Length: 135
Image 1 (cartoon, rainbow, N blue to C red):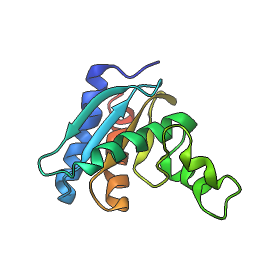
Image 2: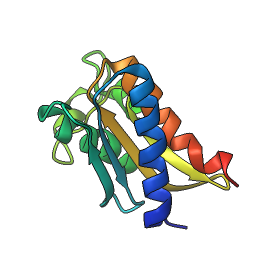
Image 3: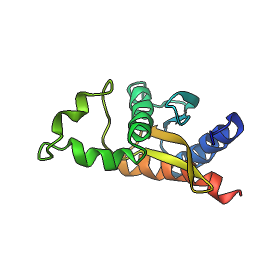
Image 4: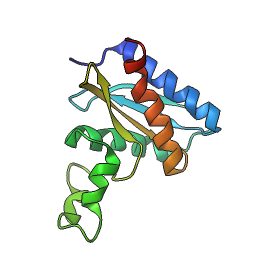
């Protein structure tokens, strides 16, 4: 199963609502399961440098089918796989990239950047959870 355009827009809107609630100007990227961009929104005044970070958080999550924060555990200097961060055109190993589930199956990925890392995670979580709420 693959995220469709309408679902990806719902994910972005739910994430954006959380960003507004937190007073964060975020970049929100939604990728399909192949890691290709499906939807993207740059809120007014969101940092331009965060565009690439949002996309790469989602891409990192997609490459390993887990959160970007989980991948980050392998990117730490003390991890035996420290050099892994330079692979796949660069990995982003901190919170804000998550799988999007529907019927317990990954259908896409969300990446958020623009706030502090915990805020990005809250925003991404709000977006990723929307499809499980509307079934």
